[in-house]
Length: 231
Ligand SMILES: *Cc1c(COP(=O)(O)O)cnc(C)c1O
Image (cartoon, rainbow, N blue to C red; front, side, top):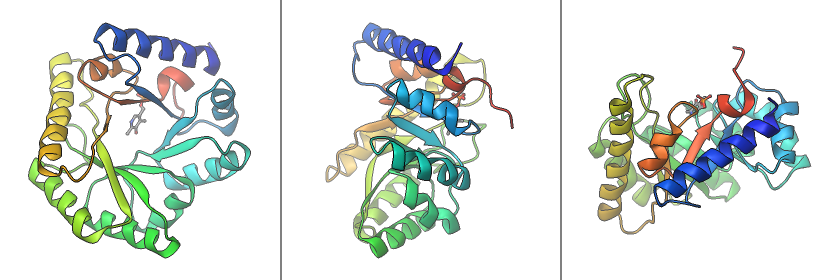
């Protein structure tokens, strides 16, 4: 099947699962286009998809600096680990950084934004599964980062949280990982009423149904839309 048919099927699926758990219309689709060529991304755009995710800055820049000129309505999120020396380049093409995982990175993002006078949306990545290697490791660390943003990063706007569930067939483990992120959001909201945390970015091709049931507001789906990646 082509990108257009896959996209339609995924959207129908999201609609069905979210309706079944009383969350219809609450879940956005982020199409993860890493390792796929511009032509395939264009097929998705022409089929109506506006929100995209990439995990490597150079690749994101090469593809989306072109695509965004042609299709100004599209939005790009960086979802992979971001090194501080790539922040400037990332900010030239992206609308949101979902993979913020250190205070050092926050500091750099704020510095780069201040130079150009822009504000950027971010999500804080939380480590909820044994297998993932990135993300803040504890709730305390996340709270520290939020306090840091509040006092030191006026150009950074935290919209919520992101996680990757462990890569396993154990559905309980996967569900627990999503529950942890949901709980983190509730606790953070109580502690920082100053912000409105609206986003829970969780769920990928293999586990997005479960993520939606646990409160995901944004599923990040690559393979089910664009097919297998050739690394
Ligand atoms: C690649 C990637 C995805 C998409 O994974 P699929 O299994 O292809 O849907 C989602 N989130 C992150 C952070 C990724 O790196």
